[in-house]
Length: 180
Ligand code: NI
Image 1 (tube, rainbow, N blue to C red):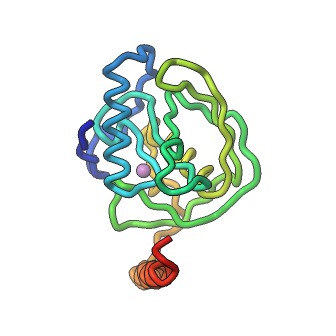
Image 2: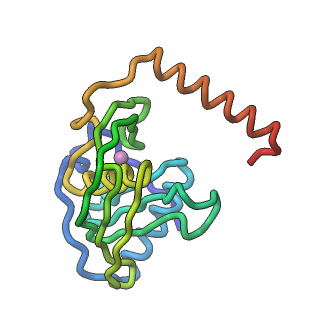
């Protein structure tokens, strides 16, 4: 496996429509393995192939309802399509390709996605909350859409500082509890 470079928002590849995957071959498996390593290293919740410069319809999404370190927590979705949406949530979103920027984006509360695994087997998966948000965000990447296109507003520096402080406190709490 190898870590690939994550493209930044000014890169034209992020604005293109990705192509359907028709060969579930070793080259595709290598791409997915590299994307997984790149995602874990970047500590993100999802990654789409165009973010590493490959214009193919493949994304990874971290299922946040699973334990940290669970191998199955990273879901591989090839040629994904959202087939059902329910409810609504409004919340904070960011992107590995748009570092340091966060915005408020409206998304469905629950989504069901139909996709193929790396061997070409079709499956369906549902996610709610943060996982639903990640499905939508990553699938948007395949059509050249960034969260910043959809944000109703962007967080201010003060709000970002507040979140950073909150995270730091959480980390400190976690250490007291034994680092869980
Ligand atoms: Ni993104």
